[in-house]
Amino acid sequence: MPEPPGSRIVLVTGASRGIGLEVATQFAALGDRVVMTARSEDALEQAAASMRASGAQVWARPLDVTSAADCGALLDWMVQNLGCPDVCVLNAGIGHWATVVDTSDQQWAETFRVNVDGVFYSARAALRPMLARGQGHLIFVSSVMARRGAANMAAYAASKAAVAVFADSLALEVKQHGIKVSVLYPGSTLTTMRARQTLRPVTPEISDPALQLRTRDVADAVVWLASASAHAFPTSLVLEPPA
Image: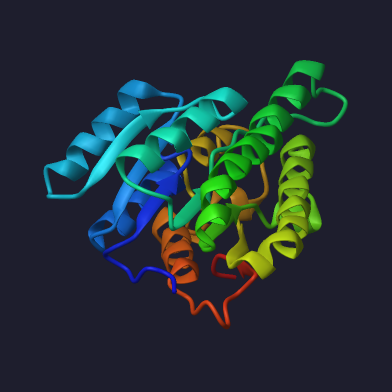
């Protein structure tokens, strides 16, 4: 049986800011033990220290998700020091603002390296102890752009579509082994990355904060997915901002 809230071991990638930080904060507030990862060691430790001051059980572990070796080492550390993760939230990602014509080879490759390869390496590393234990829940943070595309964000949208199809395929492989897989498709969300994009001329639903999701909204959905029954749980959830 899945562990109840307050007794779970949770891994959150991309947890130094934005959606990932809010997700980690909410799990920690429930009493779960949370491992936060990100590339930015200083920002990660600062966030974790603030949470620890409130009594949260959190661990800050710098991680380059594009390194299969680093992902494997992180999971080895988790299993040895905390135990098998009950929930793994695959949130780390980047985005570049550019038309297709202006997207450089480097931008395209970097987007897929982090958003797709990084998800693969992280998920594969987490799956190994989960499969050995016979339970676990992988939650992939995709985007509504994966379902309908987005002008000037083609690389990001395509990478998030790849994440979604990867997750759907993985779900078919592991469901008979007690592993749950869910995909979250958030709409436009007000994050640091999104705030930078508002400096460019974009559509109202991207530039107007009133028409965007809050990071808290997305984190609420992640925590809800993680708490769903093992017998009947959402495999996908689309989260839209106010009309």
